[in-house]
Length: 125
Image (cartoon, rainbow, N blue to C red):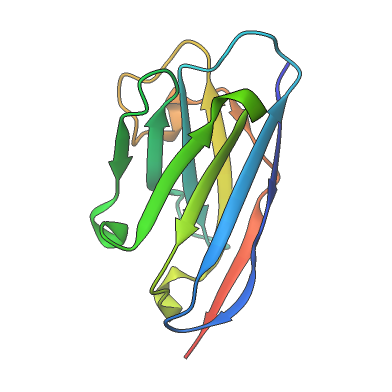
């Protein structure tokens, strides 16, 4: 079993920055893929970014390209999402996710086996 714990969310003004962290524990083998998703109450979950754990290959939703950067620290089993130039429309609960066997379609939530509890990001205008 894998536990994912997000941190780093908060309240920020438009144009500001936040850095989300996702610490993984509970399994000795490394994940194949980790990602960030976002979801508002009553709305569908949406892909934000993903990273292939071993090679570090990154993927981004069009809406965040050039503003967000996903990275990972293999030694710490931690993934990050650096969020710059934040906009009010970035407001959501952000979830990290991982898989040890999937990853064929990184943007699809069903590819991921484990999810964190979510962290709120609120951007004010």
